[in-house]
Image (cartoon, rainbow, N blue to C red; front, top):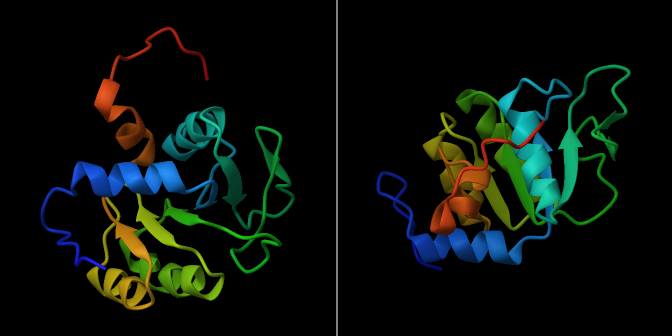
Length: 152
C-alpha cells in the first residue's frame, strides 16, 4: 500500500477510488439537527446511494432522516466499509481503534479533524485514511455545480 502524506493534497484518484468502492458508511457524530453540517453530509451521501449508519449515543435518538441510529460503532450489526468522523481531533485515535475492531476499510475524518497518531494506527492495520476533508465536497468536486435551490 502506498504511504499517504497527510500534509499534502490527497491525490484525486485516491479519494475517487475510496468514494467509488465504499458502500456502507458509519458516521460518528451524526446529528439529528438539520442546521448541523453532519446532517447535511449525511443527507447528501444517503441521496447519492450510500448506505448510511448514523452513530450518536444521545438517549432516545432512534433515527435521523428515517435512518436507524446506533449508539456506538461496536453496536452495528453489519459490515462497514468506511467510518466517517464528525468529532474533535482528540477523539480520532479511539475511533480509529474502533474502526479497526469492526473491520472497516477506510477512516475518514471531516474538515478540521486530524490526528496523525490515529492515522498511523489505522494505516498500520491496513485502513485507508483521509483527514481534514469532506466526502460530500470530494464527491462533487470533479463536476461541481452548486444547486442553490436545494432544500434540507
